[in-house]
Length: 185
Image (cartoon, rainbow, N blue to C red; front, side):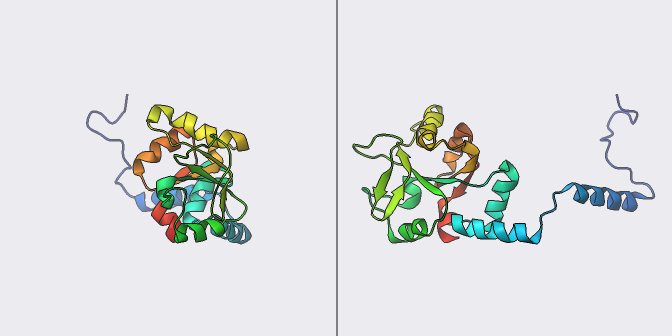
């Protein structure tokens, strides 16, 4: 039980010396943050560009998972996929990717789930059908990731539907990036 009594929220004291204690607390908190060197930041900026992301997006993923992004998982609608074809802006953006696997969740005829698929000049390392419910999201995501032995937290979902956040949770993926944000970065 608190020594302050009923109704006290145990917030900071409002007495003399408060400003100094707040200053000391902020300094101590900043000292606990990881120090990132300039070369590390430069390397992360280059890596973000290779992935077609902004630096803040990439840095948040690195900070949250401690891993580099090894694959980008795209929903077909995010890329504007129509009848096996991609629009020119998506082709340009996908062609510029370096040192990362492109994966696809799309309804494909006569395609074995988990196998690679090609759309014009773009090759997706693995593809599978999108889940139709949250209950089957984990299985649908793993069908695409397992052939490449990718851990979920090294994969970023690029989607245009906020409801696909359930896919991120089910597949234990690193993050969801909105398609418009990724295409415009």
